[in-house]
Amino acid sequence: MLAVVALFAAGVGAWFIGATPRRYYQLPFVPTWAFVMVLPVCWTVGAAVYSHFVSRLCRCRRWVRTATGVVLMSLMMIAWPISIFLSSAAGTGGRGTVRAVEVSPDGRYEAVTESFSDGFEPSCRVWLRERGGLFSRQALAWQRIEGNCPVRVYFPDDTTISVTERKDSAPMTTTFDRDRMEVAQTLPPRGR
Image (cartoon, rainbow, N blue to C red):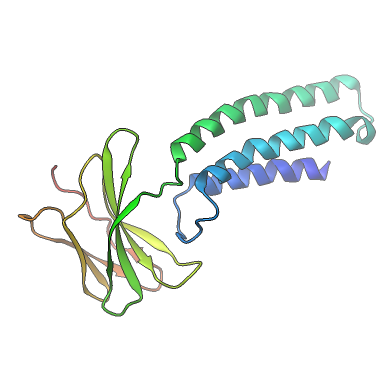
C-alpha cells in the first residue's frame, strides 16, 4: 500500500518540477514533457498495483475497495488529458533556438539570446547563465512575446547586463547578484 502512495506522490512531485520554470539549464537529457508525463504514468501504475493487491492487503468491505478504485480511475481520467495537453504545450521543454551568446568580461557568465515560439508568433528572451557545468543556474533577464530579438546584448561590467532592442533605441541595463544568480529586475520590452 505504501508503494501506491509513493507512486502517487512521485507523480505529483515530477509534475510540479516540470511545471516550474527551469532554474538549471544544463539538463538536456530530461525534457519538460517527460516530467509532465510522469504524473499519469505513476498514477496508472499505482492504480494497477492497488487493483492487483487490494484484495490481499485490505480486508475491508468490497464497496470500500470499489469506491477507492473508482476514485483512482477518475483521477487518472483527469490526469491523462491534462498531462498530454501540457506536454504538447511544453514542446521542446521551453527551449528555443540560440541566436547569440555574449560572454561576461570575467568569463563566468553568458547572456544567451534565444528565439522561441509561443504557439502563434515568434518570441525572444535573454537568459543570464552561469558557465559552471552540469548544475549551472540561469535567470531570465529580458523577454518579448510576439516580437523580435534584441539587436545587441552585452556586459558593460562583471555584474551588469545591457539589452538594446533596436538600432535606434538606448540600451536597457540591469544588475545581477552573482552569488544568488538573480537579476535585480527583468527588463521590460519597449514598444514593438
